[in-house]
Image 1 (tube, rainbow, N blue to C red):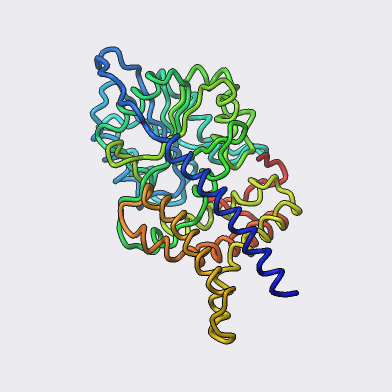
Image 2 (image 1 turned 45 degrees about the horizontal axis):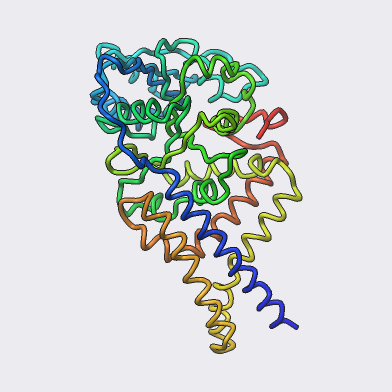
Length: 375
């Protein structure tokens, strides 16, 4: 009976592997710049407001602003909203005033707003560009990134583009044991729930104002996803996987990635406990081949272990195909650590459910108002 159950799980995993392979293959083809936009006279390029929300980001703010200021995009303004930082973030940003960086001091947070969403709204209110690039402090722009993004948006006639940045740093713990957040985004992308990235997203200012700014998504843990979904219905949204040529990358510590997953996972499952349980069971099933191989240490190698090893290798290849597009280094090691990535995801999912049910989710040192969250 046990063998039949194991063979059944292996069969299910084979079907899932085929599905994952197709979805990832489709995503890797879809989310790339197929044709380079033609030359656009710099005088004809629209103005862009680079808007950066920050809270307690003193350690990484300098590099972020240095990279933005090195951009060759001529019609650009840079605005930083300091959301009541407890460190020296505000002092550091003000030191860049002579280079044209505009500082906005944070105010009181309304009870029905998430802190970052209010920061985005304040940045929108203060911006003047025809386009807005919202970017996180841990995101790094190349000198030509902004021009290429704007040119792509114009050539595709879309109102919003979000980009999955690359990891250009090397053999760091945060790279090797990165979370599976964007892997799932690519696998489960569709028109109604499109893949979206919070690190960097470009949007027409008038379009965002027409969507009532951030007001309708003020309590969403991933507001860019909801905005992308609205625009995708009219074919006005694109998602891109960054390439070395695009020059968009990020450096995020492991604990920051873990905190992000804890904040996002349960809401992205609709804040539904039954869905969370199903997701947890699915992750446990994905571990089956690894468990079968480990079990061979006690029971010996059989046909079950052979099938499990083949399936496990298949998932490593699938995950490695994603990592190779997203990482400059250590992608092969990351693929080999697929079982550990699943184990990590299980722990993060359980933690996310527990924290959200107890209403004890902390974001940048501030307790989230989870009662009003919308996914």
